[in-house]
Image (cartoon, rainbow, N blue to C red; front, side, top):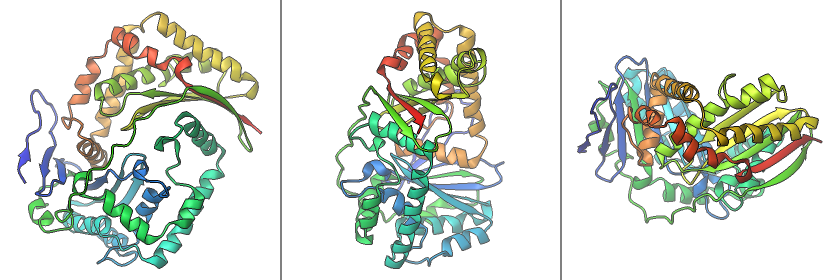
Length: 422
């Protein structure tokens, strides 16, 4: 496994090391000698965006089934053995990818790595377990459908992202989930868990973990190549407006969604992170200071940047009384217009830079956060240099944010959803 050197010029932090197995699988690791635990994080480009017609919910369902055992691990054996080593495990399915991670004391990392790779790459997919776990997934879907806030959020995505995977629920559609069979899941696994689409990330005190020995001849090294899949379409957000009445919704919601650059445009994404922070992070941010503190129109107002591979999303949510929705929307437009008319003060941008940079630095303190960061970046071909985001933050001035980013959050370009208690 020849090493690929990472940029180290003027770096103040240790840098990850990226290696490739003979079959092309990426293995990225970062030594964190002072961390109390090792994080083993397996990534695959097998999120819900990879589902083909008839496969709704299969990516998330597979995440559940993986923990039901492998060819060599019986039901519950993985959890029992990891816990007996002092560790714990979890997984998450997103639109773009899925990852499975284990947090483990250093002395148990080697055995836990063997177990994790067996579990994820050789799932058993037993028919009886499949039927039982389907009920768990359906119950999870029912709980989501019973939460008014979840209904509102999913409606926003459905309407703003028509015809795109980002507009469909990751949990899937009930009718499709009821039709799924183990054979179809096995096909999905083979199609998406192959050498070009997987990455293993490790962070923590790794000194005693012999990766060369552990990975040679194991299931990760046995992954085969697969025919190139057709690239999923980029997001094309639809602007517009919709009104929705929702039973049991406790307060009105004004939601707005904007399309922003995809994750691969990491410098632009960093600019978006700064502007959304300037607008809605903390009491001194513009939207919070005006709409909540000064005008007292909202209970809360949030603006989050959701970084995605086919096109990112900025999602605003304001919670208010039903009779104040119109005033809230006018207030948002007023705040945006003020920002469009004149660049933000340098002190505002410096505050946003400090908040974003500090949040990033804090994320580098835990092995779990670091493994997630370097695993995701390696999987999608983004810079692995841990200093890169901090350097990028400094390149955004008030004038540049004003010219390049403020127009992107024009309310006229957004999809707006007004959700009212039924």
